[in-house]
Length: 370
Image: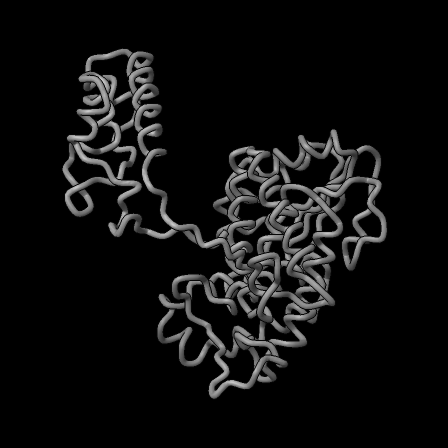
């Protein structure tokens, strides 16, 4: 869903805020003391004479300050959390905006997919996958995307952000778990992006060609409350361009970067972070790793590749039995029980069939940033 209101019963933040007096009335003396320190309540009110709770101290440092064992400190905190949660559940909840927005879901899908890889959280990947499947079944129809779903009905032609953010989310999710239908959807979305949103002189309009006429048809390059749709479009075009060997995608990314360069990108770079990330990817292409093998072997290699932080690395783990892969992926054929292909731009290493060789070939993070 889209949002929760900030206010309930006419007071902003009332559902989430706490006071020292509430802690003292709900918790026993030791619990109130430990929980107050842990959640930052003893530092004073941080919102209109009340406090949003946050983790102000680590468990170890809190235990040391309180002259308690870590186990006892954790026990007091656990008891406090239960009491506080039970009390909060009795409060009037903020209103929930139950619209499903495609663009915001695209961002969430991408974020959850990254978190699933980094934290090894299967539940996050499942949630992201369910969101993709929902959008595919409810908001994607006859080769076009809708921007919003509410009351069992898809509404409004999708905008640039809807297409770009959803493609981005799908590409991140593909790095956690391969599904051929997801890559196919990303390709279809890109084709609509190019045919219906691209300006002849470069960059992408916010509205599609068949959208109702506007006095001004915006073509946003700057980041605002959300990333620039053009910036995210450039990034996904570069990744897919190198992944599939699709020159059209790379040329479209280059045209968008050229259109953004003057005067905005050069004069106000701090307002164009998404475009700058796209420029960085264009000048220094991502490291593309394709692993082919049996599912049991893929997991170990995939965990190894994603173990370190490298934002310019894209890794897809594709099972041996996958056929009819698009573009350059068709050339990444299975060999033996498992094989990895590493490419940077147009340069590719020989196929790798051992984990030890893969470790040697992977570019260290510091070098990858140079």
